[in-house]
Length: 398
Image 1 (cartoon, rainbow, N blue to C red):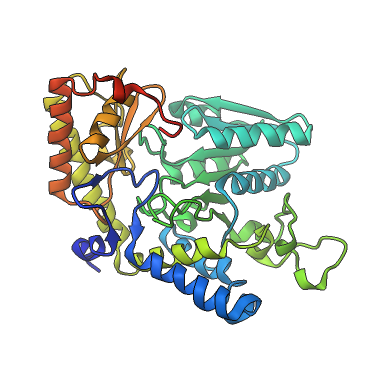
Image 2 (tube, rainbow, N blue to C red):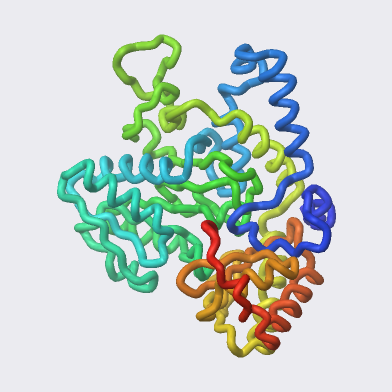
């Protein structure tokens, strides 16, 4: 299959004149999403009311829709479920992984991991109070840190700041050789790069659907559990909908069958309706085409900016094979530079302390968008347009 990226671009609502380079933080609105949500509100919630849990398939959505996500990350059918937030899914995966290695007390991660993953680990360690320790090392030092004290290796495949990408297959293999369970956070991977959980023999994976998958703000997170673990995994968050028979209303918990046990609370029906519409876009998309086009666009952006904007330092790996679908630069005034860009219709974002991020995807970007964005950025740098008071006022969300 060869992907027609003009056709995918036509499926998104993008404001006229805007170059949107922030899909790695929040994907744009699929045109079909509003109608799909309206249908769910008016025809299902409105007309069918509570019978929609059965008639409209609301109860089955978390696994049925999750398999569509699973197809993009190389998951076996029936081993991914949607619901809750990414923080909740991190907690679930980590608690389950710890139980699979009860004699080992070290949870290993790296200094490039997204902070919430580390926060959830810290909170779980405190609540368990069983002597566990969170250890973080530099990304390049992961292999050397794998030893028989480590029970769980928890990594984000693509660094949220720099776009640096871990070798999932090699690190999973190295961890397994030491008896270590792996958890992969795919927040910046799903819909951005080809992922093969099954081929990599990953144990657990989690991720969100509002970035490259374009599911909208608050879109549900996902969790994957490998077949070899699914029936031995004990849910730390034993919610009603993860019960083997929720409507039997038993007074004691019994885990559901397979991936159903990783459900917790009520499915976010309206958000899943939006995500369902977003997933339609992927039906005619080949992930390798996405990767190839992203690489080409990223190379253009890096070449233009490193040649013409000497004050900006490339923060992403120069080797595209080591980089996800984002390009980052550093500058002491990174926040003001991003605000000046946004004022001229180029939307990227800033990550403390000094990172300017650009998410690259061919689903709705073109080569001319990339070159135009580079022109505007270089003009801002050359004329110090960013050095104005209004661009230095920090907003709550950066």
